[in-house]
Length: 330
Ligand SMILES: C[S@@+](CC[C@H](N)C(=O)[O-])C[C@H]1O[C@@H](n2cnc3c(N)ncnc32)[C@H](O)[C@@H]1O
Image (cartoon, protein in one colour):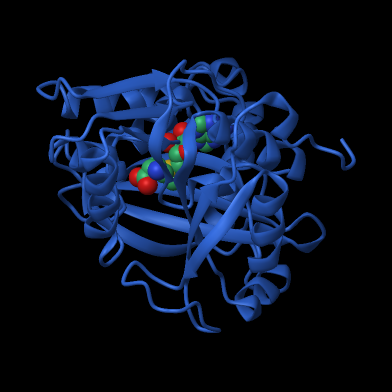
């Protein structure tokens, strides 16, 4: 038994347990039992604790491989992007998807004949995207950070679907991302940013008794192993920095209905962007807001809208003197 490998994040606790032999069990010392109980505690109490040490490369690969089955399209989403991409294509322009993940959206646009580039930080997500789009010569993938990238080309349309912009946690980085995007847009090119609009009462609950409580949120079949997977998901919220913390644990359900394996993603920090924060941010980064919708059917943003869909045009008029600079605190 290799406890040290768990501590060093080389293997997960689930992997350690999977390799246990009867001899291991017979030879367990009191110290080992104590260590194992400590490791099991977070699972049994289902309370939010820092289990990030269990988040491994394996969890990142699992997230990428199951992303498309776990995350459904938003109603009207793909048609909305298709329409805008077709407009860019008819003007001879291509489309950039920033933080494209597995290419859930980008590939659908490329399938319509549009030239599309997808950029993402995660090699695991891009591996899935590449495999899915192998037959599409008009689809290109780049590994890079949305806060600072240089592709050497411009686009008529840049999109950030699926709340991905919320992975950026500070105003400095948000600005840097928008500045990078603006450099890649043709003059008056269009940017679409899809954010969520969480209920304020839910965020309040997360700061009290709901925070860190794991609930079953999804059940799906793993596309590669065929095994049923159950997702336990806990959220918490830090109001001072507008940070929501998502924590998922995936359980593989065996033929006997019992949990056969567990994988911990660890906490992921996401920024909760409020409406007028976004409006100011876009203006500051050199964009003119064209619209903000509450869904992909272009309904107005209302109190009970769960989504925010921002359309903004680059005010770019050429020349470095027009490039906005960050002037706030670092
Ligand atoms: C929730 S997924 C959304 C993927 C895709 N936009 C979609 O709608 O299906 C968020 C993605 O953002 C990517 N990401 C997070 N931080 C990033 C960064 N700094 N630069 C580029 N991509 C990033 C992650 O790797 C992940 O693929």
